[in-house]
Image (cartoon, rainbow, N blue to C red; front, side):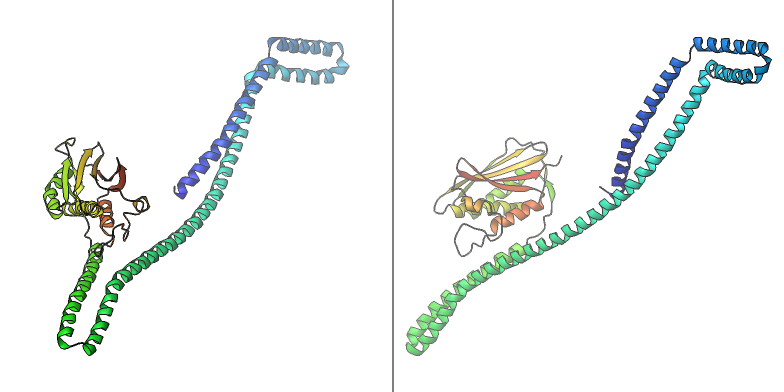
Amino acid sequence: MTDSKIRTLLLCTILVTTGLPLLAAFYFLGDALERSLNLGFNSQIVQTLDAAAQNLKALKSLDPAGESVYREQFDQVETLQHVYSQPEVLKRALRDSLRTYFGVGLVAAVLMAVIVALLLGRRIHTSYRLTFEELTRQRDRVRYLEQMSSWQELARILAHEIKNPLTPIEVLVTSLSRAHEEQSAAAFREQLVQAQTMIGEEISHLKRTVSHFSDFARLPEAQLALRNPADVIREHLPAVSARFESADLRLHDAGCPPGLRANLDSSLFRQVLTNIVANGVEANPGRRVLFDITVTCAPAGVRIAIANDGVPVPQELAAHMFEPYISGKSGQDNVGLGLAIVKKIVVEHAGEIGYVEEDGHPMFVLSLARVA
């Protein structure tokens, strides 16, 4: 809410809280005066005043010495007769006075409301600005700490992945130096061939590790186009099935209309399918894994559920499974980036992804916005 809106709201509030009591007081006071005047003005009083005027005229004739006194009293009676014979004049005068006082009170209330609104608005603006600046500083601190934490975690993982192959390489080189001095030429050549093979394997592992991190860092931005999600999945099923010999993939999309549309990047969505299937296959080594991919649609969204009949993810890993470098599987090529890549791709599609267990089996649920 902007400062001008806050000031306007405060001004309206103060006007209502001050104007309504003044209006009510004006109404009730006017009504009370009207009732009082109606009670006081009646024909009997006018008749009494007429009789008093006639009596004063008669007394003036009977007692000329008191003429000045009778004249003064007669003038007073005539004045009262004038007032009581024309009550509307008095009512109008009283009503005009009330309007004047009410107008002065309302103007004073408006001025007071404006002053109070300005003061409160300035104070709220100052407080809001200070609070916003403090929150901004805190947010920058938290962001910096998060970035440092991410870099530290990345450095730790890289150090671990690089240190593992370097240790056997160092041992092999040391053993070759000793063998060159102690063994015959034929034995040394045989050991050299073995060392070359082992060092080549460790270097290949280093290259694969660097390649994984490089792929994650260079993940392209999504190039979205209107596609039918069921058609995109159907296009990629043969290639994904061919890549994983122990995986059986089935698509269920009977409930979706042919005109279903969502913003999709077909090539990136293929990587989503590949990584999720790879996760299920690696979690169930030595057996065939059945994957059921179910596409359902609602008026505003598309739901894609990818379930398999394998073992579920352990609870301690389920809450962090989409974070980089988190994995429950062992292996030289596994650095825990597959599901992190899936999460990034889905977020770039303005969608959501989650993990649930259904009947004791794992299931990934993707939600995408449906385009009319």
